[in-house]
Image (tube, rainbow, N blue to C red; front, side, top):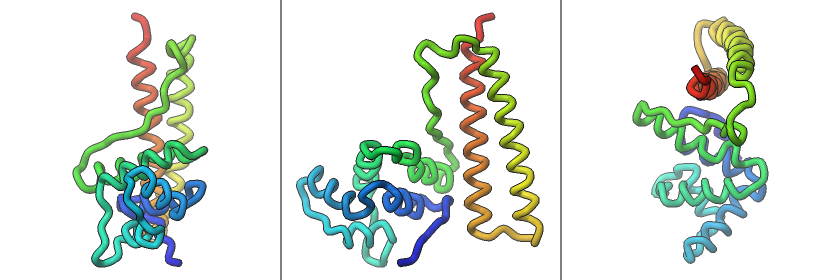
Length: 171
């Protein structure tokens, strides 16, 4: 089986995330069959996820697969990645899953801001090292591209979380 690991094409992201969700493609096909009231064999779903000639993935099915992943333990953290990738790569839009703050916000927003700034610094250090390593040979391969993409997205989420903290500081 060919494994596609690119985090910069939405269908690759959806396929890989369905595969890594508990139950994988077989369980996803069962969920779709029950949810839609229309039978879909897991190999047919795999063909759609692979983008095989003559097969296509609809947004309706992708959305239902997102619903399925959100119901599975551990999959909620990546269930929206395909939509984020689609928005960014195809349309230049950004949408991110930003974890919710604690109920009522942080007890000390200033401390939360400070912690985010420290985390951003550490993340930027890792991004610097990864970028230098990736560029050492004068090119970026698919694995390096995917890793750098993921690091930049993690940095973006941290930035939005910090901005949310700043917006709640009482003046």
